[in-house]
Image (cartoon, rainbow, N blue to C red; front, side, top):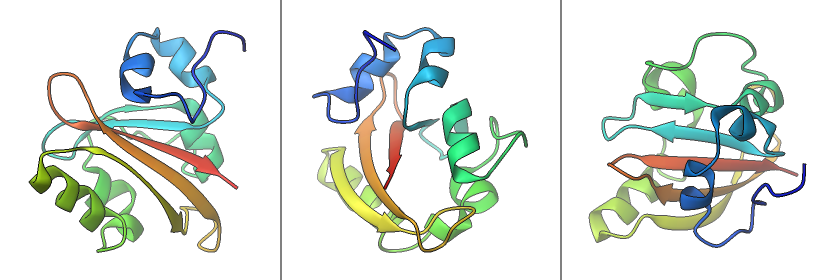
Length: 125
């Protein structure tokens, strides 16, 4: 869809926050917004589909303990926590593992959300 930000868009979080919810669902990559306590505030339909999470309710659940405990480790959550501690939440890294396919390669971008919390963007190879 024309006019949507792509995964490489500078300041992707700000660009996504300007979109209507139905357009966030139209992004070709996953988009998850967490509040400052790690609770899911937004979980795009594309992320639900591409990850294999499906139609289960995600909003209001703790991301790292209830939805993606496989990402509650040093190589994923640890990177986010270290960036938060440094005061800069604008990181990108590659992660191996997904809800439905533990061997899948994910390109990950994590950026601060307006008002606290963060956005996690996931692009699958």
